[in-house]
Length: 367
Ligand SMILES: [Zn+2]
Ligand SMILES: [Zn+2]
Image (cartoon, rainbow, N blue to C red; front, side, top):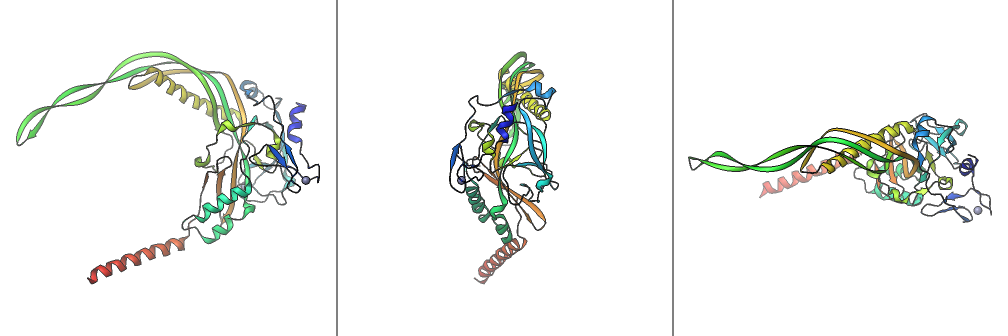
Protein backbone atom coordinates (compact mmCIF):
# COMPACT_ATOMS: atom_id res chain seq x y z
CA UNK A 1 0.00 0.00 0.00
CA UNK A 2 2.73 2.43 1.02
CA UNK A 3 4.72 1.60 -2.06
CA UNK A 4 1.73 2.14 -4.37
CA UNK A 5 1.12 5.61 -2.97
CA UNK A 6 4.74 6.59 -3.39
CA UNK A 7 4.64 5.78 -7.10
CA UNK A 8 1.96 8.28 -8.00
CA UNK A 9 2.71 11.08 -5.59
CA UNK A 10 6.34 11.56 -6.39
CA UNK A 11 6.91 14.57 -8.60
CA UNK A 12 10.42 14.77 -9.89
CA UNK A 13 12.33 18.02 -9.99
CA UNK A 14 15.45 18.82 -11.95
CA UNK A 15 18.63 18.36 -9.90
CA UNK A 16 20.25 21.33 -11.68
CA UNK A 17 17.54 23.99 -11.71
CA UNK A 18 14.61 22.66 -9.69
CA UNK A 19 12.09 22.83 -12.56
CA UNK A 20 9.50 20.08 -12.91
CA UNK A 21 10.64 17.18 -15.10
CA UNK A 22 8.22 16.20 -17.87
CA UNK A 23 7.80 13.02 -19.86
CA UNK A 24 9.48 13.24 -23.27
CA UNK A 25 7.21 11.50 -25.83
CA UNK A 26 8.70 8.60 -27.76
CA UNK A 27 11.31 7.93 -25.06
CA UNK A 28 11.46 6.42 -21.58
CA UNK A 29 12.91 9.54 -20.00
CA UNK A 30 11.69 12.58 -18.13
CA UNK A 31 13.38 15.81 -19.16
CA UNK A 32 13.92 19.36 -17.91
CA UNK A 33 12.64 21.90 -20.45
CA UNK A 34 15.15 24.50 -19.28
CA UNK A 35 18.52 22.75 -18.97
CA UNK A 36 17.85 19.47 -20.83
CA UNK A 37 18.69 17.34 -17.82
CA UNK A 38 17.31 13.81 -18.38
CA UNK A 39 16.39 10.91 -16.15
CA UNK A 40 15.39 7.41 -17.22
CA UNK A 41 12.00 6.20 -16.07
CA UNK A 42 12.67 3.09 -14.00
CA UNK A 43 10.38 0.36 -15.29
CA UNK A 44 8.58 -1.99 -12.94
CA UNK A 45 10.37 -5.33 -13.19
CA UNK A 46 7.16 -7.19 -12.33
CA UNK A 47 5.58 -6.02 -15.61
CA UNK A 48 1.86 -5.37 -15.92
CA UNK A 49 -0.47 -5.46 -13.00
CA UNK A 50 -3.22 -7.84 -14.08
CA UNK A 51 -5.63 -7.82 -11.17
CA UNK A 52 -8.03 -10.55 -10.16
CA UNK A 53 -11.52 -9.26 -10.95
CA UNK A 54 -13.66 -10.77 -8.17
CA UNK A 55 -12.21 -8.92 -5.14
CA UNK A 56 -12.60 -5.59 -6.95
CA UNK A 57 -16.18 -6.20 -7.94
CA UNK A 58 -17.18 -7.07 -4.40
CA UNK A 59 -15.12 -4.55 -2.46
CA UNK A 60 -13.72 -1.45 -4.13
CA UNK A 61 -11.57 1.04 -2.32
CA UNK A 62 -9.86 -1.16 0.23
CA UNK A 63 -7.65 -2.79 -2.37
CA UNK A 64 -3.92 -2.37 -2.40
CA UNK A 65 -3.90 -1.09 -5.98
CA UNK A 66 -6.33 1.72 -5.39
CA UNK A 67 -5.24 5.13 -4.21
CA UNK A 68 -6.23 8.78 -4.18
CA UNK A 69 -5.83 11.19 -7.06
CA UNK A 70 -6.44 14.96 -7.35
CA UNK A 71 -9.34 15.61 -9.72
CA UNK A 72 -10.85 18.63 -11.43
CA UNK A 73 -14.43 18.37 -12.63
CA UNK A 74 -15.59 20.46 -15.59
CA UNK A 75 -18.98 22.01 -14.77
CA UNK A 76 -19.59 22.69 -18.44
CA UNK A 77 -19.09 19.27 -20.09
CA UNK A 78 -18.71 16.90 -17.13
CA UNK A 79 -15.21 15.60 -17.92
CA UNK A 80 -13.14 14.49 -14.91
CA UNK A 81 -9.51 15.35 -15.34
CA UNK A 82 -6.27 15.09 -13.46
CA UNK A 83 -3.73 17.73 -14.40
CA UNK A 84 -0.21 16.81 -13.48
CA UNK A 85 1.34 20.05 -14.58
CA UNK A 86 1.03 23.52 -13.08
CA UNK A 87 -0.48 25.25 -16.10
CA UNK A 88 -0.58 29.01 -15.83
CA UNK A 89 -4.24 28.87 -16.70
CA UNK A 90 -6.23 25.67 -16.38
CA UNK A 91 -8.76 24.85 -19.06
CA UNK A 92 -10.92 21.81 -19.66
CA UNK A 93 -9.17 19.71 -22.26
CA UNK A 94 -12.47 19.02 -24.05
CA UNK A 95 -14.37 22.30 -24.02
CA UNK A 96 -11.79 24.97 -23.04
CA UNK A 97 -13.94 26.05 -20.05
CA UNK A 98 -11.67 27.60 -17.38
CA UNK A 99 -11.09 25.32 -14.38
CA UNK A 100 -10.36 26.58 -10.90
CA UNK A 101 -7.55 24.85 -9.04
CA UNK A 102 -9.32 25.55 -5.71
CA UNK A 103 -12.11 23.23 -6.91
CA UNK A 104 -9.72 20.24 -6.98
CA UNK A 105 -10.78 17.32 -4.82
CA UNK A 106 -9.37 13.93 -3.93
CA UNK A 107 -10.94 10.75 -5.25
CA UNK A 108 -10.21 7.04 -5.05
CA UNK A 109 -9.16 5.41 -8.23
CA UNK A 110 -7.82 2.05 -9.29
CA UNK A 111 -4.20 2.62 -10.15
CA UNK A 112 -3.50 2.00 -13.87
CA UNK A 113 -1.84 -1.34 -14.57
CA UNK A 114 -0.37 -0.23 -17.88
CA UNK A 115 0.08 2.87 -20.01
CA UNK A 116 0.72 3.56 -23.67
CA UNK A 117 3.06 6.56 -23.52
CA UNK A 118 2.79 9.39 -26.06
CA UNK A 119 5.02 8.70 -29.06
CA UNK A 120 5.41 12.26 -30.34
CA UNK A 121 5.34 15.67 -28.70
CA UNK A 122 2.84 18.51 -28.69
CA UNK A 123 4.78 20.38 -31.38
CA UNK A 124 4.48 17.46 -33.79
CA UNK A 125 0.77 17.06 -32.99
CA UNK A 126 0.33 20.72 -33.79
CA UNK A 127 2.01 20.21 -37.16
CA UNK A 128 -0.41 17.37 -37.93
CA UNK A 129 -3.35 19.63 -36.95
CA UNK A 130 -2.05 22.51 -39.07
CA UNK A 131 -1.62 20.34 -42.14
CA UNK A 132 -5.10 18.89 -41.73
CA UNK A 133 -6.87 22.19 -41.03
CA UNK A 134 -5.17 23.89 -44.00
CA UNK A 135 -6.37 21.05 -46.23
CA UNK A 136 -10.03 21.45 -45.18
CA UNK A 137 -12.36 22.58 -47.95
CA UNK A 138 -14.82 25.39 -47.25
CA UNK A 139 -13.56 25.95 -43.72
CA UNK A 140 -14.12 29.47 -42.39
CA UNK A 141 -10.91 31.51 -42.23
CA UNK A 142 -11.44 32.19 -38.53
CA UNK A 143 -11.54 28.46 -37.89
CA UNK A 144 -8.03 28.12 -39.22
CA UNK A 145 -6.89 30.87 -36.88
CA UNK A 146 -8.66 29.39 -33.84
CA UNK A 147 -7.67 25.80 -34.49
CA UNK A 148 -4.06 26.72 -35.05
CA UNK A 149 -3.57 28.26 -31.63
CA UNK A 150 -1.07 25.83 -30.01
CA UNK A 151 -2.56 26.71 -26.60
CA UNK A 152 -5.67 24.78 -27.61
CA UNK A 153 -3.88 21.49 -28.21
CA UNK A 154 -3.32 19.23 -25.23
CA UNK A 155 -2.16 15.68 -24.65
CA UNK A 156 -4.72 13.58 -22.79
CA UNK A 157 -4.51 10.04 -21.42
CA UNK A 158 -7.86 8.30 -21.87
CA UNK A 159 -8.99 5.59 -19.45
CA UNK A 160 -9.91 2.11 -20.68
CA UNK A 161 -10.57 -1.25 -19.04
CA UNK A 162 -9.14 -4.44 -20.49
CA UNK A 163 -10.31 -7.88 -19.46
CA UNK A 164 -8.76 -11.33 -19.79
CA UNK A 165 -10.59 -14.57 -19.09
CA UNK A 166 -10.68 -18.27 -19.76
CA UNK A 167 -13.87 -18.96 -21.69
CA UNK A 168 -15.86 -22.23 -21.74
CA UNK A 169 -19.20 -22.81 -23.45
CA UNK A 170 -21.57 -25.70 -24.14
CA UNK A 171 -23.81 -25.27 -27.13
CA UNK A 172 -26.56 -26.98 -29.08
CA UNK A 173 -27.26 -26.05 -32.67
CA UNK A 174 -27.66 -27.10 -36.26
CA UNK A 175 -25.11 -27.54 -38.98
CA UNK A 176 -26.23 -26.62 -42.50
CA UNK A 177 -24.60 -28.15 -45.60
CA UNK A 178 -25.49 -26.85 -49.04
CA UNK A 179 -26.48 -29.13 -51.88
CA UNK A 180 -27.90 -28.41 -55.31
CA UNK A 181 -30.94 -29.83 -57.09
CA UNK A 182 -32.10 -29.57 -60.68
CA UNK A 183 -35.51 -27.96 -60.85
CA UNK A 184 -37.53 -28.12 -64.09
CA UNK A 185 -39.28 -24.96 -65.29
CA UNK A 186 -41.24 -23.88 -68.38
CA UNK A 187 -39.87 -21.25 -70.73
CA UNK A 188 -41.03 -19.75 -74.00
CA UNK A 189 -38.55 -19.92 -76.89
CA UNK A 190 -39.59 -18.60 -80.31
CA UNK A 191 -43.24 -18.81 -79.32
CA UNK A 192 -42.94 -22.42 -78.15
CA UNK A 193 -43.16 -23.67 -74.61
CA UNK A 194 -40.17 -25.80 -73.64
CA UNK A 195 -39.06 -27.43 -70.38
CA UNK A 196 -35.70 -26.50 -68.97
CA UNK A 197 -33.90 -27.14 -65.68
CA UNK A 198 -32.03 -24.86 -63.40
CA UNK A 199 -29.88 -25.49 -60.28
CA UNK A 200 -31.19 -24.41 -56.92
CA UNK A 201 -29.38 -24.37 -53.61
CA UNK A 202 -30.83 -26.29 -50.66
CA UNK A 203 -29.58 -26.74 -47.12
CA UNK A 204 -29.41 -30.04 -45.26
CA UNK A 205 -29.67 -29.40 -41.50
CA UNK A 206 -28.26 -31.79 -38.90
CA UNK A 207 -28.55 -31.30 -35.14
CA UNK A 208 -25.31 -30.98 -33.24
CA UNK A 209 -23.92 -30.16 -29.82
CA UNK A 210 -20.48 -29.55 -28.43
CA UNK A 211 -18.24 -27.38 -26.31
CA UNK A 212 -15.54 -24.84 -26.91
CA UNK A 213 -12.89 -23.21 -24.77
CA UNK A 214 -10.14 -20.67 -25.15
CA UNK A 215 -8.43 -17.62 -23.74
CA UNK A 216 -10.03 -14.20 -24.35
CA UNK A 217 -7.20 -11.68 -24.29
CA UNK A 218 -7.34 -7.90 -23.82
CA UNK A 219 -11.00 -7.09 -24.45
CA UNK A 220 -10.83 -3.29 -24.65
CA UNK A 221 -13.73 -1.36 -23.07
CA UNK A 222 -13.80 2.43 -22.88
CA UNK A 223 -13.99 3.69 -19.32
CA UNK A 224 -15.18 7.25 -19.83
CA UNK A 225 -18.69 8.24 -20.86
CA UNK A 226 -17.77 10.81 -23.51
CA UNK A 227 -21.42 11.57 -24.11
CA UNK A 228 -20.59 14.99 -25.48
CA UNK A 229 -16.89 14.36 -25.97
CA UNK A 230 -17.05 11.43 -28.29
CA UNK A 231 -13.68 10.05 -29.37
CA UNK A 232 -14.04 9.08 -33.07
CA UNK A 233 -13.54 5.39 -33.85
CA UNK A 234 -11.28 6.45 -36.71
CA UNK A 235 -8.55 7.33 -34.24
CA UNK A 236 -9.28 4.63 -31.61
CA UNK A 237 -6.89 2.01 -32.93
CA UNK A 238 -3.96 1.68 -30.61
CA UNK A 239 -1.35 -1.06 -30.80
CA UNK A 240 -1.68 -2.53 -27.30
CA UNK A 241 1.52 -4.54 -27.78
CA UNK A 242 3.37 -1.30 -27.00
CA UNK A 243 1.81 -1.00 -23.51
CA UNK A 244 4.28 -0.28 -20.72
CA UNK A 245 3.96 -1.06 -17.03
CA UNK A 246 2.42 1.99 -15.38
CA UNK A 247 4.68 4.66 -14.00
CA UNK A 248 3.35 8.08 -13.05
CA UNK A 249 6.38 9.73 -14.70
CA UNK A 250 4.67 9.13 -18.07
CA UNK A 251 1.86 11.46 -16.93
CA UNK A 252 4.15 14.41 -16.20
CA UNK A 253 3.17 17.30 -18.49
CA UNK A 254 -0.10 15.70 -19.65
CA UNK A 255 -3.76 15.62 -18.62
CA UNK A 256 -5.22 12.32 -17.41
CA UNK A 257 -8.92 11.56 -17.44
CA UNK A 258 -10.36 9.45 -14.66
CA UNK A 259 -12.73 6.65 -15.59
CA UNK A 260 -16.41 7.51 -15.21
CA UNK A 261 -17.65 4.07 -16.23
CA UNK A 262 -17.25 1.91 -13.12
CA UNK A 263 -15.41 -1.39 -13.30
CA UNK A 264 -18.71 -3.23 -12.77
CA UNK A 265 -20.28 -1.69 -15.91
CA UNK A 266 -17.08 -2.19 -17.90
CA UNK A 267 -17.20 -5.84 -16.89
CA UNK A 268 -20.81 -6.16 -18.12
CA UNK A 269 -19.75 -4.82 -21.54
CA UNK A 270 -16.79 -7.19 -21.70
CA UNK A 271 -19.04 -10.14 -20.80
CA UNK A 272 -21.27 -9.20 -23.77
CA UNK A 273 -18.16 -9.15 -25.97
CA UNK A 274 -17.22 -12.59 -24.62
CA UNK A 275 -20.72 -13.93 -25.46
CA UNK A 276 -20.25 -12.65 -28.99
CA UNK A 277 -16.85 -14.37 -29.22
CA UNK A 278 -18.32 -17.61 -27.79
CA UNK A 279 -20.96 -17.64 -30.57
CA UNK A 280 -18.30 -17.13 -33.25
CA UNK A 281 -16.21 -19.95 -31.82
CA UNK A 282 -19.25 -22.24 -31.59
CA UNK A 283 -20.11 -21.56 -35.25
CA UNK A 284 -16.56 -22.34 -36.28
CA UNK A 285 -16.76 -25.54 -34.22
CA UNK A 286 -20.04 -26.59 -35.86
CA UNK A 287 -18.53 -26.21 -39.33
CA UNK A 288 -20.47 -26.79 -42.56
CA UNK A 289 -21.66 -24.00 -44.83
CA UNK A 290 -24.02 -22.29 -42.41
CA UNK A 291 -24.85 -22.64 -38.72
CA UNK A 292 -27.63 -22.09 -36.23
CA UNK A 293 -27.12 -21.86 -32.49
CA UNK A 294 -30.12 -22.90 -30.39
CA UNK A 295 -28.62 -22.52 -26.94
CA UNK A 296 -25.26 -21.57 -25.49
CA UNK A 297 -24.08 -21.66 -21.89
CA UNK A 298 -20.95 -19.64 -21.32
CA UNK A 299 -18.79 -19.38 -18.24
CA UNK A 300 -15.72 -17.26 -17.64
CA UNK A 301 -13.05 -18.22 -15.13
CA UNK A 302 -9.73 -16.74 -13.98
CA UNK A 303 -10.99 -13.29 -14.87
CA UNK A 304 -8.45 -10.49 -14.58
CA UNK A 305 -8.57 -6.85 -15.57
CA UNK A 306 -6.34 -3.85 -16.05
CA UNK A 307 -7.05 -0.16 -15.93
CA UNK A 308 -5.01 1.28 -18.79
CA UNK A 309 -4.33 4.77 -20.17
CA UNK A 310 -4.13 5.52 -23.91
CA UNK A 311 -2.81 8.74 -25.51
CA UNK A 312 -4.71 11.30 -27.64
CA UNK A 313 -4.05 14.92 -28.49
CA UNK A 314 -7.17 17.08 -28.38
CA UNK A 315 -7.65 20.49 -29.89
CA UNK A 316 -10.72 22.19 -28.45
CA UNK A 317 -12.09 25.60 -29.31
CA UNK A 318 -15.32 27.54 -29.63
CA UNK A 319 -16.43 28.78 -33.02
CA UNK A 320 -19.46 31.10 -33.29
CA UNK A 321 -20.93 29.69 -30.10
CA UNK A 322 -20.37 26.04 -30.94
CA UNK A 323 -17.77 23.69 -29.53
CA UNK A 324 -15.43 21.76 -31.80
CA UNK A 325 -12.84 19.08 -31.09
CA UNK A 326 -10.10 17.59 -33.21
CA UNK A 327 -8.44 14.37 -32.11
CA UNK A 328 -5.08 12.79 -32.91
CA UNK A 329 -4.07 9.31 -31.83
CA UNK A 330 -0.97 9.92 -29.66
CA UNK A 331 0.63 6.70 -30.85
CA UNK A 332 -0.15 6.51 -34.58
CA UNK A 333 -0.84 10.15 -35.52
CA UNK A 334 -4.28 9.32 -37.05
CA UNK A 335 -6.49 12.45 -37.05
CA UNK A 336 -10.24 13.08 -37.05
CA UNK A 337 -12.65 15.79 -36.02
CA UNK A 338 -15.91 17.64 -36.51
CA UNK A 339 -15.62 20.89 -38.40
CA UNK A 340 -17.73 23.85 -39.42
CA UNK A 341 -18.35 24.89 -43.05
CA UNK A 342 -18.26 28.42 -44.32
CA UNK A 343 -21.65 29.31 -45.82
CA UNK A 344 -20.17 32.07 -47.97
CA UNK A 345 -17.33 29.96 -49.35
CA UNK A 346 -19.80 27.29 -50.45
CA UNK A 347 -22.24 29.93 -51.77
CA UNK A 348 -19.59 31.54 -53.99
CA UNK A 349 -18.25 28.16 -55.11
CA UNK A 350 -21.72 27.08 -56.31
CA UNK A 351 -22.22 30.49 -57.91
CA UNK A 352 -18.94 30.05 -59.78
CA UNK A 353 -20.00 26.60 -61.05
CA UNK A 354 -23.35 28.03 -62.25
CA UNK A 355 -21.56 30.83 -64.09
CA UNK A 356 -19.19 28.37 -65.79
CA UNK A 357 -22.08 26.11 -66.80
CA UNK A 358 -24.05 29.08 -68.15
CA UNK A 359 -21.01 30.27 -70.08
CA UNK A 360 -20.43 26.85 -71.66
CA UNK A 361 -24.10 26.63 -72.59
CA UNK A 362 -24.01 30.10 -74.17
CA UNK A 363 -20.85 29.20 -76.16
CA UNK A 364 -22.40 25.97 -77.51
CA UNK A 365 -25.61 27.83 -78.50
CA UNK A 366 -23.60 30.41 -80.47
CA UNK A 367 -22.22 27.81 -82.94
ZN1 LIG B 1 16.85 21.80 -15.24
ZN1 LIG C 1 -15.30 20.72 -20.20
